[in-house]
Length: 471
Image (cartoon, rainbow, N blue to C red; front, side, top):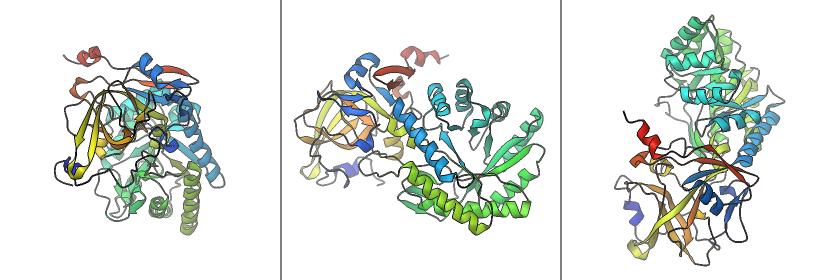
């Protein structure tokens, strides 16, 4: 809709989106939405790794991002093992955790300990990797406008790859490498004309974007040619493509791989270069609501291996070492956000429908995805169970915006009241990473729970933190 954002919400008889059904048991958890160690205890309290939400609220306060450490680690290992197994008969594979989803020093350490590489896209994310002790060769650097300072920091740390995104950047990286007396390993980011989201992909004119070199215009091949001309300062490792986010099958990768491997073969033949690597990006989806059905990493890896092997055989080129970049698929399900309810307001809608507005002590400052992407989330009562019937609810924040919505549509017990705890699953990716201090609201902490113990890995901001930047 292009009218006011609330317009569709007051349509006659609105009962929520078609995929949302009134639950038989409003207290039941949908396992696919939560980390592996989340349960509801006998007293009705939501627990994670054996620790109750009520105890968490008392110890660390609300709102808070609650991260299930074992879940995060197990998802990282699952991707590592799946891609190692699927590509072992070929040239092997590497998994780069996409730090943009969520990154802090402790998480970077986990990534390294679980055998993954790390993809960063700013000087700040690189600084986290350095602080966490990641060897440079395990770090890849992304970004469409890397500064000279960022490039220099990356090359001084000895990163394993720099993904170049423009002709200007090729020259910039070459100049910095020459000044430092090193040869920079680079990948060319290729815009292949494929955009994949959810269960659909479109292979038309999706090259009108800020990222990458166009395949159809020939600029991607020209980028490879120019890099080859900088043999004393640049080494072209291979090509890189990324086709979207929240992808639930491999059909989009099939079209993308065919196109990028066609360019790969042309570069090998016409420029005489050995391209040992190919990065197929990330974007693997997770279940935010019951509408979503993500594929297990093993199925993704097996499907992608079949595609890559077939396309390389058709092009008559050796299979390069493959890399992928899951971020959301590892971090997203591992975390829920814990809030406290402040107010409850029933609102009558047109057509006889009604909705309960449940205001919590956070909002778009800790989860901007509903406002930014029209993203859907789920939620549940975390501090108790209820025998009350389910009612259509909207969980909203405390900010001065009508679009400050945390959960657009979900069924909660009719007796939800101030003081209740609400947990919103699937908030581990792009929530803390995209958080803000809107309305001068301090950002929540990130707390990791393991074996019934909680520890803070990113502390809560304070009013003093907010005021400290004022000059």
